Amino acid sequence: NLSFNALTSFGSEFSTLFNLQTL
Image (cartoon, rainbow, N blue to C red; front, side, top):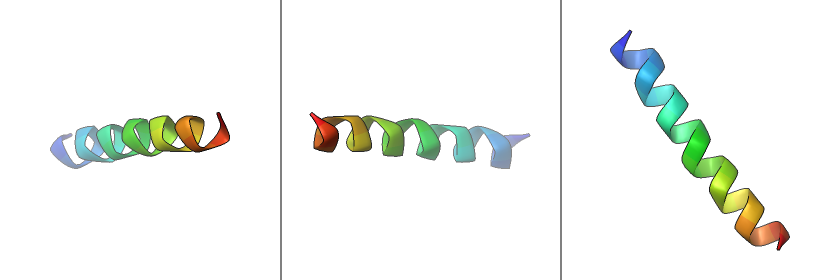
């Protein structure tokens, strides 16, 4: 469960970074 939570957090941060770069 902890591993999944960490993966989700990483995905969220990566998504935000991608959105910022796209903007």
